[in-house]
Amino acid sequence: MPDHVSLFLVPTPIGNLDDITLRAIKVLNEVDVILAEDTRTSGKLLKHHQITNSLHSYHIFNEHKSAEKLIARMSAGEQMALISDAGTPAISDPGFLLVREALKAGLEVSCLPGATAFVPALVNSGLPSDKFVFEGFLPHKKGRQTRLQKLAEEERTIVLYESPHRLIKCLEQLKEHLGNRQVSVSREISKMFEETARGTLEELITYFNEKGVKGEFVIVVAGKG
Image 1 (cartoon, helix red, strand yellow):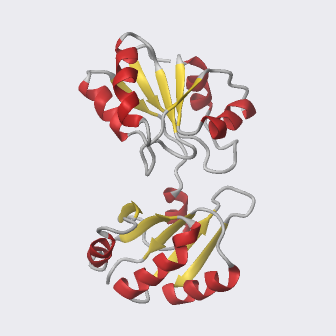
Image 2 (cartoon, helix red, strand yellow):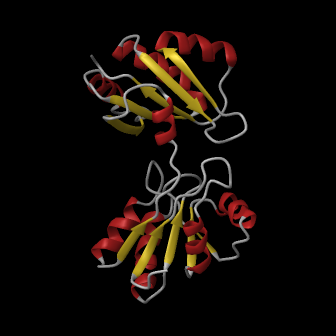
């Protein structure tokens, strides 16, 4: 493991615990401390791979307060690894602030390649993947309508994240603002009940109203044109 790197961003599995690289396991074993979004969730992953390193809580509610202290420790020579509950840190998860502050302090940051939910959902959608825009989670209230209006003019494939209790509302709003476009909705990627449903927005609204909604979702919508 390179001595000059102070902060490693380590992707973790989005479902199947074996979807982790050998390099990621090596880094997690060798750093001085692992920064985890939820230590209980990450503890299961570490136990599965027999990683006994110490965990420190780092999440969206404490990142502003924690960043300065963590930067000081890394500046003093400690090496740290940041992981989220699932996927690549800082992609719709905490991490950006710590990376920015580490770089400001002149520290070396390295992001390992690995799992993230939107890539398999995009590739599996059957929609054009050569050019796309990743929106993450749409704003819940303020700015949501404005964002949807802008997306209505987007010609590239659109990728969104959505939670189960907002999925149908999101699909309905997409249909209202973008029209009845082709869409692919993936849930529980790499888990036992993985599923991808494809069709028009209208068809998938009907489908999920009848089937029910469970799991975390990635929505891939055809661009304008």
